[in-house]
Image (cartoon, rainbow, N blue to C red; front, side, top):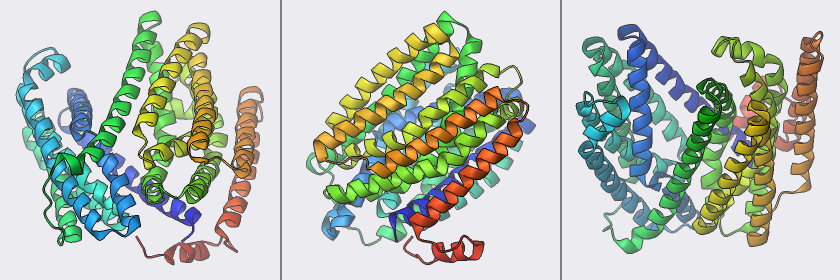
Length: 493
């Protein structure tokens, strides 16, 4: 199966699974709103954010680094090493999960004080410690499926977990009200760990037990720690920026920025995350083949550009209505942020795909140094531009930062491995950029006929998208039945 076909197929699969997970969270939030009220939504937000942070630290990045190890080992056809890797990962996640659970329980009193200003929720954080354990186990076990590229099994697990979590949450929230929030979170985490454990056993029942040692686990932990530290550093950078905005301006300004950032990271992050779910194990399997890696990174980046094209054309025209629906008409500054930050998303298509080459190569030292340096520059740029231009400066800063990221990571990877973007990528990047520029100009300066311009530009972009996909996928027709038949040919997932 061609890489373009693989990317489209897995993007559709993982985007669908991500949407399903979001819908389940929305459903549970709706139940909390009905049974408990606004205070329940607040509690749910605090506990879920705390769970995300605590499980991320407890995981030590192993769920991410293990994808690379398993994909790389399986590509080599080394059955003994694959057996060893899976056994080590299966043990390691229990150790890190238990440590995270114990630490959360020990600190439960202080976590309650920090989160709520009192110790009333100490017991809730004790239960959250158990949820941390189950979440780490679930993520670690899922990483084995991702590394083996068992995507149909991952899809099946996600559907089962989502369905059971929602069904179980109904009686818990109904009977226990506010106390049921933490119980619902714990039940969801337990269901996730149990379902993935059953699936993992069906895949690895012939895996031998391997003794866990420093020698056979150190590389996995080192890469995982690097990825975890980067995630924490990026979160810290975002926290510093938001705190600075709140101090020198107002909390309302932080709200405008946060609303815009959530739209950019949410809509486009859904595409990027879905695409990366298969891209990372795919390039990890080719980590020692630079020519094939170069082909993969160019195909991934090119298809990312093509897929976001319609969105960067449409959003400038519909943002005023989206903001009113999602928030209120008071969020006019958010519209400005999103429309300008869209240009940065275009550059991000290239920088994100090229950056993963360093991880696939297990070059954690360079990757950490690069991200820390770049994030520091990003933070300084954002602060300087915010001081000069306010919210508009933050949007311009995002676009400049992503352009800087694209240029610098291309130079670094080319210097280290002779891997670079080809002329096709830059040609399509320019085309999508021009579409975005014209759309922004028409939506801002031609208000009388903006819907006519929107329809015209969107039609042109969709024609461009279909013709490009037809060329890349070598499909003779775009009739629905022919497209379905084309994607059904492959049964490898």
